Length: 131
Image (cartoon, rainbow, N blue to C red):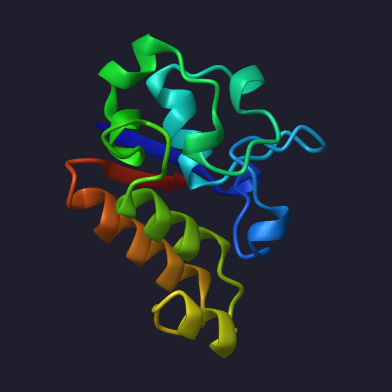
């Protein structure tokens, strides 16, 4: 799967409190929102939802790569989803939160993008950032 993330509408580095799969206030998405959207999940279903396990699941979506974001019973986020959310939401140069998430301190958006690319690539999802 090729995953396209548009930097102009990508929520990142704002902390988990302000990150949503699709934030209706400004029509922005986190990295998992872009993935869900490209897997066929409607923005309405993920509007102001903070994580994959909170989405009103359509059985069709479980036949896509979106299923990688849920554990076996679809009631909890997978380890992959948790790691991707932590990378996506981590504020730059935030030592405390980086330590809590067991991540290196992010010093640039380029580092964030590289980490996301590596995580997704391990599951045959190839990320392209645009704009």
